Amino acid sequence: MNTHNDPRDVALGLALRSDLKTFNVGAVIFDKYGIFSWGWNHWLARGEQGLISVCAERHALGIGGERLVNRRRLAGATIVVAGCKKHNGNIFLARPCEICFPFIVKFRIRKIIYTQRGGSWGEDRLY
Ligand SMILES: [Zn+2]
Image (cartoon, protein in one colour):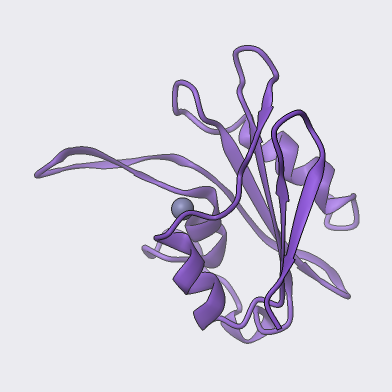
């Protein structure tokens, strides 16, 4: 992982690691020193309700114990979320979902950058 590459490109590349069938998402967290965490959506475990997947954002935030993240570095950082369907390359809206968003707020992420349908990038500044 080259932590000085454009976080948008890295997030799009990470979406390819997703093992979900249709909606493949990658996420990257960076600050002024560069990228320091990343993730992709993937199947986690078989629970009582069947297979459970974890979002790229939560994977990058270290929710669920799979990834160790320097949480102090999250405050003021930016998260980039990129959605790209592996089977046809189509870019889709990848704004954080209602499960991930509260964690992003809790860890004081300052800005969210996300793909929009067609390939442009949206941006939400939280504070
Ligand atoms: Zn989510």
